[in-house]
Image (cartoon, rainbow, N blue to C red):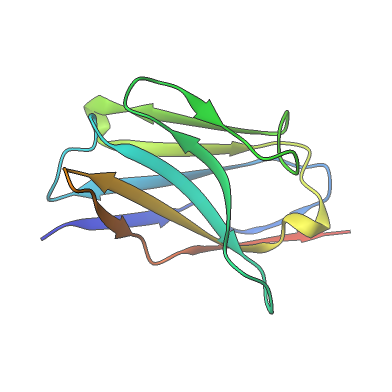
Length: 117
C-alpha cells in the first residue's frame, strides 16, 4: 500500500521558517517526480515546488527564492524548506509523488501551515 505522510506544518510568525517533510512508504520515489502543492480556503490547489528524478526544480514566482524542495533517497523522503514566510503562504500543503509509465499520482493527506502577521 502506497502512503505519503506529510509533517512539519504549524503556526509561525511572518518572516519565520518551516521545513515540511513527506515520507513515502510502499514505493520508492527516488526515480519519481515529486511536488508540493498548497490550497488556501476558497482557492484552487496550486503548485509551489517540483522536483524531477534528475534533480531539476521548478518554483512559481510567488515562492521563488523563499522555498526549496529537496529529496533524501535513503530516507525516501521529500522536503520543502520555507523561509521568509508570509501570511499569504497560509494553506494546507500537500505532497505529490508521481511514478510509472503512464504515471500514477499519489497524494498525501496534507499538513496545515499558518503564518500570522
